[in-house]
Length: 329
Image 1 (tube, rainbow, N blue to C red):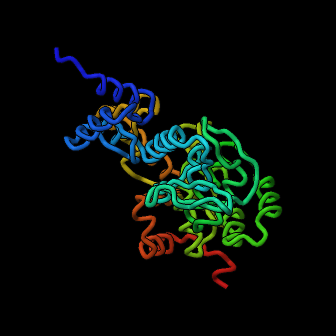
Image 2 (cartoon, rainbow, N blue to C red; image 1 turned 135 degrees about the vertical axis):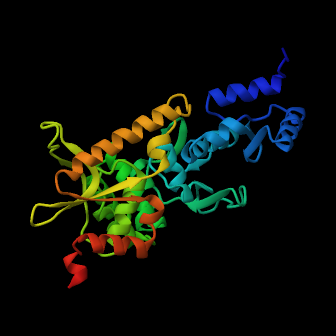
């Protein structure tokens, strides 16, 4: 049996702890760099390493969290803010916003940290907290910063998740925005996003698709609709989102994608077996067949299709989804 080196063992231990490995000295860094060259290791952040294969299987937010942990170890006095703080708070930050890393600095502090890797933001005040073992802006300030800095779709995903996890309330956010948002660039967008926030959204993908529907001028869909199952009375079936028309008929939107059938185990990160994936798909198709018996129109679409504005508009229009009265008037 081949004996593993101390460097390999340390990489494996860091992987099990969901951390990046920081080399203890220059010789160890050189050994890690050689592994990066061979492709057995990777360097997600300058001076921080991971085993390439298990790291590449992680979801983007898990990777971002590992990077934040490494940066905190390297720079314990840095305070994370904006989208980075949102990751630390456990919010559904869209993949496009996970990099660079965002830190809060004083007006006189140098902005030259790690160009290309770190973005510096002037401190807007507010309390500091330790979340997930790292110094961050408080949740309310983090949400205000995020919603001021991004558009409706991504902002809705972030704030929906805060409400979904019961970390705050709509009323508490509205008060904080009123008290601390005056004069902030992007505050108008932030308030518009907050107006549509709904904690019933179960994931960031649902929130982004709902935002796309609203942007196209359709009525805001109801979330997590429950419809009585005619084949199993007393056990209603639930749909991601949809509309109940004046005649009582439902139009339901079902987001589809491989992640629904091939999601990894949250605890072990293990891939499911083909048998498990087929069972999940079979149960999904059976649920849909029961919904069809109610006379509902079911619109099944992928996340990519939902973000194709022309396709989504034609699909919803053809299905008879009502337009927002303010938009159509």
